[in-house]
Every structure is written in C-alpha cells, then in structure tokens.
View 1: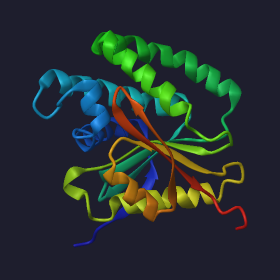
View 2 (view 1 turned 45 degrees about the vertical axis):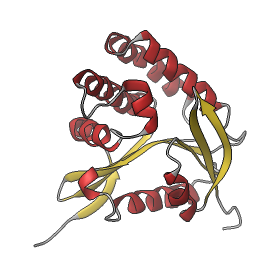
View 3 (view 1 turned 90 degrees about the vertical axis):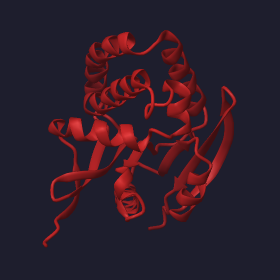
Length: 214
C-alpha cells in the first residue's frame, strides 16, 4: 500500500484535527494537568483543554506564527507551532487586535484562576528566553498512537532546517515541564539554559544555538 508522508503548513481547515491531536498529546503534560486538571477523566477539564488549544491555533494565524503538521495520507499525526524572530509590526498589531475577539470567549470557558496561572506562567518563561533574536517553540505534539515512530523527530529536524536557513535567527528556545523531555531535546542539540519553578512545578528552559559558521 502506498503511503504519502509530508510536512506542510497547516491551513485553517486543519483546526479540528489539530485541536484533537494536541488535546490528546498533552493530556498527561504536567503543565496542562496543573492548569486544567485531568482531561482524560474529567469532562470539565477536557472542555478547558479543547478551548485553550483552539485558542492557540487561532492565535498562530492571527499573529503569523508558523504552524506545521506531519501528514500521512492526509491524516494529521503531529504538529508544531513556532514563533518567528521577525514579524511585520503592522500585521502583528492588526493580529493582536483581532486576537482580543478570541480572548473574550476564552475568558468564559476558563476560570479566572486558570487565566491568572497562564499569565503567571508566561511571565516566568518569557523572563528566561535569551536576549537575542530566535525562534520560540510554543508547542509540539504527536498523536499518541504514532508516538515513537519518528514523527516528532521529523518535525524537530524540519524546524532545525528552517532555523538554519533563517539569517535573522540565532536558534530556538523552548520550555518543558517534563524532565524526561530534556534527554530527548538534548539529542537534537538543545542545552538546558535555566531551571526554574512555577507554583512548585519545575520548568526547564532550553535553547538550541545555531551554528553561525555554516
């Protein structure tokens, strides 16, 4: 049987599979459990996760972030969203204004406590990024049934290639709350740049420094 594999930019029509994939991929993520609760066993928590991931997808288009997916026969098996180091100021302002229309519905789906925690988490992670132009890996996830089959590796290698070709970017920053992920990212050249805490939740900040001699 012929199998068609590709990595390509996501379109707005990919929202439903993206939300489904990321919601399941992050169901046991320490940060998601801390913010939303157990989405596998709590319907209310599941709805919160769905609302948040849906918002992140919309945000990626409004703020002109890069959202790419790994497809097999048109089925989405993995995806990542990355913030680029250079963005058109006018487009960013316009996107930010439009984003307000997405934030308001989110406020009715998440509690004020959850929104406060999200804001606090962003302050912690933003303070840890290096003071240089770089990509920021917002989220990367793989369909649970496809984990361990090279999908995440293919996505990360695609991102590394993209960053290597970007003369404005000096590397990639990311944050993870899962200590096991540190070993995985180190295999791709990431180094642990800072270890901090958010509400007693360990946060590991990592950075991939591009070889500028290439």
